[in-house]
Each structure stands twice: as C-alpha cells, then as structure tokens.
Length: 471
Image (cartoon, rainbow, N blue to C red; front, side):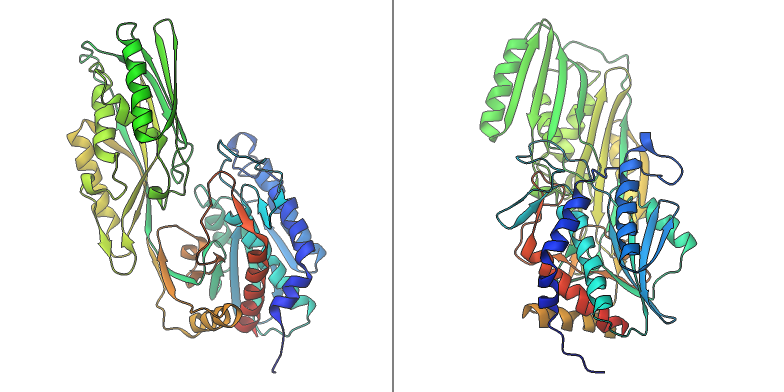
C-alpha cells in the first residue's frame, strides 16, 4: 500500500498538546532517590511517578501497557511476530547549581522548553510517544509490533533495562531517541572506577592540614562545584591571597573564607556530560591543582599531588597511559566525576572512562591499577560496559537514513559517540536523535532546554521511521 502522508504537518498539528505533555513530565523531578525506594519504586518515588505518568497516558491513548515492577515499562501497538523497539528514559541527573530558571518548572520562552531532562531524555521520549500516537491515529496497518520501552535508571546503573529484558522479549531491531541525529551506530565502552587513597598515619609532617574535600555528584557529570576545608593559622592569609590570584589567572569564580584557624575554599566550574569532559570546567580537578601548590602535610599531599598530576589539563588519559583511539570511534576520554577526601578515612577519585570500540577494558583495568599503585592508591570499584557496534550495511539502517534525509534534506551520516545509550542494551540497535546537527548539547548542564521546533521535527522523523520499519 502506498501512502502519502505529510509527517511534519501531522506532528505540527499536535504541537500544543505535545508541549503540554512534555511540561507535565519535566515538572516531575525524577532524580533517582534510593531513600524513597521500595516495592514498585526501585529508583524512588519521583522516578516511579514519571514512569506511571507516561504509562497512564499510553493507556488513555489505547496502547497496550505494562509496568515491569517499576523498573521499566512499555507501550505497544501493532501486530505480528517481529518487534520494533524504541527505548527512552524518564530519569534525570540532579539539577546542579547555577540555573537562571527553575529546573523543574518547564518554562517555555523564546521557542525553547527549559528544564532538567528536556533534552535528556524526556523531550525525545515524548516525541517518540507522539510519533506512535500519529501512526495509531492515522489508522495505518502495521505488520510488526512497535514497543516504546521506558526506563527509570539510565543515568545511573541501567538496572531498569537489565530487569526489563530478564522478563520481556528482546526487540528484533530498535532505535534510541537519546543522542544525536543522524544515526549513531558505534558507542564507546564505559568504565566507572574508583581509585582509593588511605593516608599513612606516620607521614604527618609539617604543613597545611587538608581536613576535607568534596566535588561531584555523579561519575558521568563534570563537577561544577568543589570545596576544600583546611586548618592551620600559620600562612592562612597567604593561602587566601594565592587562591584569589590563582582564580584570577585561570578566569575561575572562587571564594575563600576564614574562621579562626579554618579556611574554606570554594570553586565554581562548568558542568558537562561525562562523555565530553573537555566541554566543561572540572571544579574538583582545578581546586586540587591549586592545593598542590600549597605546602600540605604528608597525610594529604600524596593524594592531592596524584590528582593534580594525573588529571589537570588531561581528559584523554595520556598521563595514565590510556591514550587509546581508533578510526571508528575516536579517542578515549576520562572524566573525574567524583572527588572526596576526609582526613581520617582518606580519599576517592571516581572516574568515568569512555574507551574506543577496538580497545580492551581489561587492559585498561590493569593499566589503571598499576598507575594508581605507583602513587600509593588502589583500584576499588571497576564496572565495565562493553562497546556497542552495529554493522552499517543493513536494510533497516538504510531505512532510517532514507527517512532522515527525506525529512531534513540533509545526508544521514553514521556516527560514533562516547556517550552510552540504551542502544547497547539491544541486540541490534542504534541511537537516532533527537539532537540535530549544529545544536549545542546542553544535556546535564544548567539551563538545559530543547528547541520546540526540533521536538516537532523529531516527532515527524520518528513517526515515519516507525511506520516504515513496522509496515
């Protein structure tokens, strides 16, 4: 059957309704919260609320709906043996500091909808939902089933999709609206690792005392704030003068305060996604770099000097011997997402490493362990999510390329990224939007937003793609 559908017009007609839907979802602050977790809400009450909202809306629109123990859920339409999967998520990273709008108000201004999760990944997920609505409301016959699978733990440990696919069938093919257009067929491996420092009580010595240090909330976010607390009346005024000069020279926003013998140094950075740490300013690493200039005592000095030497100005792992790259997916990247130190318990460096598809995670583990050992640290937690690669010369990939080119008039190049999307949870899956070429990537950043016109365009692309793949 030949159909002549103006997919963009169908999406445009639903623009106001779609925006209201997205606002309702963004207004749910669905950050993972283990304190409120329980049966049916394994990632906390707000994540469960967001999942329930979208499943309820699916049920109201006539889709077949299933909640899989609160870990994930799906909306399904169509018939047949084959299954097309579309995977999105409704959990978000913490808002962080420095917003000029309320991160959970879903304010619309100047053609943009602002809020945490607007682009990652509530906006694209709502676009996929409305794409399915369009196909359903047009009454188009489908010879395959289409399932929008909604996860609740993508920003943390992916327990959502692991649990889901332990209980539900794996799609034959699928796409993930949680990255960039045109099509991403290669995703780097992702390692989260902790380097642990335990202070030697016999190496106190003279010098400034670092009481505590804290920076970062998640492995996959560049820390946008850091704080160090120091003690020692002797030299405190000089520390503050040097810190202020350091901040001026680097163009950084830092503050210093003194109360008796205690000096507190705070530093602002710029958050960014851990897959592209060079796009942010790591407040933790920068503050450690300053502390390395001070005459610290022997208890904290090895930890501070290691962090400054290994990571200041290097997001490619070169100083750790991890400078891998390949033609398919580019360079290895390292994000210091978590930094903490306590005078009694020691310190932890939490790393998020994205490595090329041809590199070996076990080799990286051994190198990281050896390098840490040389500086008196040990390798603690080490989790390795293997790279994902889909051969490009497949009919369904060519279908997605054709749809994208018809809707945009632009070539549908195949890309590789450092980010990790749900595509790697599929046997055969790619990431497919929703960020268009040339648009800034504001995921995980303050004042995150999505362009409303882009949501409509993405909805049109997804609607045509769903129909073309499932007819």
